[in-house]
Amino acid sequence: MLLATDYPFLEVFWTILIFFSFFIWIWLLFVVFGDIFRRADIGGWGKTGWIIFVIVLPYLGVFVYLIAEHKGMTERTIAAQEAAKSSMDQYVRETAGGSDPTQQIAKASELLKDGTITQAEFDAIKTKALAS
Image: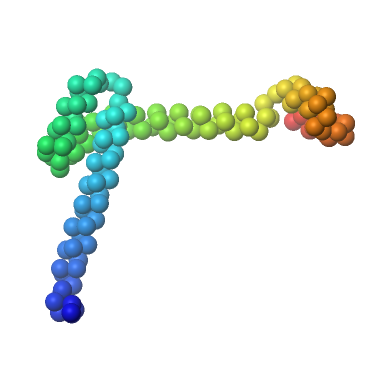
């Protein structure tokens, strides 16, 4: 039976500290590996060298990579976020269909010809497209 006196508070605190330190290191390892594989400025041998360095000397390899490549990591992350944002913006523009009134009217006209929408719905779409 485990009693509170068998596992004092400082040992609990130390266990929590070790656990979170290990979790943070694992997270940093994923970040470093992700950055290494996403890099386009080094070739396969460079990537292999960094991976071997990080695997052979785990803590030192991760920290050296973070120190040596911090600026490049920041630039690559910002570029990836901007690309994701522009892709999402483009998707929203295409999905919303609010870009060009003539395209909206042409699509509505095709739907009217196919019998998908009624003349009243076509007129509403046309009015909305011309108003924007």
